[in-house]
Amino acid sequence: MSITPLMPVYPRCGVRPVRGEHCHLIDEDGTRYLDFASGIAVNLLGHSHKGLIGAIQKQAETLMHVSNLYGSPQGEALAQRLVDKTFADTVFFTNSGAEAVECAIKTARAYHQHEGGDANRTELITFTNAFHGRTMATISASNQEKMHKGFYPMLAGFQYAEFDNLESAKALMSDKTAGFLVEPIQGEGGIRPGSDAFIRGLRQLADENDLMLVFDEVQCGVARTGKLYAYEHYGIEPDIMATAKGIGGGFPLGACLATEKAARGMGFGTHGSTYGGNPLAMAAGMAVMDAVANEEFLAEVTEKGERLRARLEQFIGNYPDLFELVRGKGLMLGLKMKVESRPFFVHLRDNHQLLTVAAGDNTLRVLPPLVAGEAEFDEFFEKLSAGAASFDPEA
Image (cartoon, rainbow, N blue to C red; front, side, top):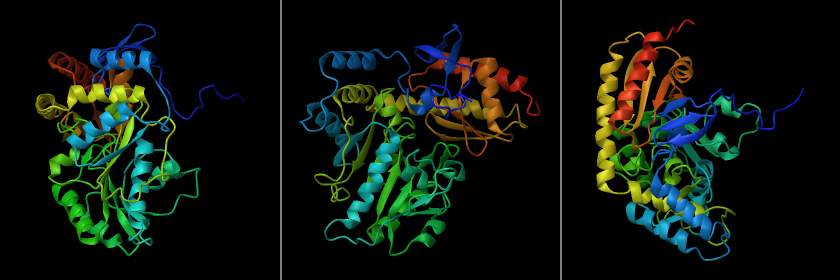
C-alpha cells in the first residue's frame, strides 16, 4: 500500500486547472471551464483582476511577512476600513475561515469569563446542518456525524438547535449559555437563508440575556449577497462575526470582527497568529475592499442576482422532475433538486465544462464571480440547459 504525496483527504476529480481568465479556468490540457464555483465563493473578482493582482505583486516586492511582534500599518489600514464599513469596533486577522470562527468562539467565551462576567457561561448554541470549518472546535460546533467520525471525542461547549427554528434555540438556553453561533445564510447546508423572524429573534434573545450573537459569514459575506455582509439584510447587527473566503479574493485571509463590548476579554496574550495579518494578505484585502465596498458595486451584484434568479426560476420550470426551487440572495444561489445533486454537479463538470458546487439538502450551489456579466450568464444557461437535457438520474 502506498499513500499519495498529497494526503488523500479529497476525492479529487480529473479537472486540473493551471490558469484562470476572468470567469474561466483552463485545464493543463487546454480545456476551458466556466467557473461558477469561484473556489467555493472565494474568487469573487474572478481570476485575472488587475487591481488584485497588481496589489499583491507590488506588496510582494516590498514586504511579505514580519510577524505580529511589530506595528502593522497595513493591518491597521484594513482593520479601520472594515470597522468603518461594518458594525465592528475591532478586528483580528486570520489565514482562514476556520481560524476566524475559532477566534469568534474564543471571543464569545472570553466575554463572559472576563472580569465582571459569568464564568459559568461557556456553551454556544449552534444549528443543524451548519458548517463552521474543519478544526476540532469548528467540527464540534457542527452536528454533522460525517465530520465527527474518526475524531472523537468532540470538544464540549456546544448545543445543537434546529436551524431557522427560534423555539428550538430557546429551549436549549440555560445558565451555561454564552451565545449563539449561526450562519445567517447556510452555505454547505444548502444555501438556506435564515428567516427574518429567526435571525431577529436570536438578536432579541441575546439582548435580553446578555448573550453573544456570533455570525459565521465566511461564505455569505464580502458582497456575495448584494450587501457587504448578509446581516445587513436583516436590519440587525451581530456582536461578533467571522469572515474569510472572498475577503482575500483568492489569497488566504480571514478575520474576526467584534464590538468593543464583545471583545472585552481579548486582551494581551489571549490570542495570536504567526501569519495572520501579514502585509501581503492585507494588500489583497485592501484591493478587494477597493473593488466591492461601494454602493455601485453592491447594487450591481443585487441586480445581477435578481436577473440570474429570475432566469433560473424560469429555467427549472422546463425540468419539473429535476428541480424543486431556487433560493439564496444576490449571487449566492442554490438550486434545490428533486434528485441527489452530486451526480448532476459531476455531469455538468465532466460533460459540459460547467463548474458549480454540490451542497447539502440536494442543492447545487451557483456561486459565480461577482464580476460575471451577461456573456457569462448566457454561457451558464447554455451549459446548464444542455446538462439538464442530457442528464439521466438513473445512470
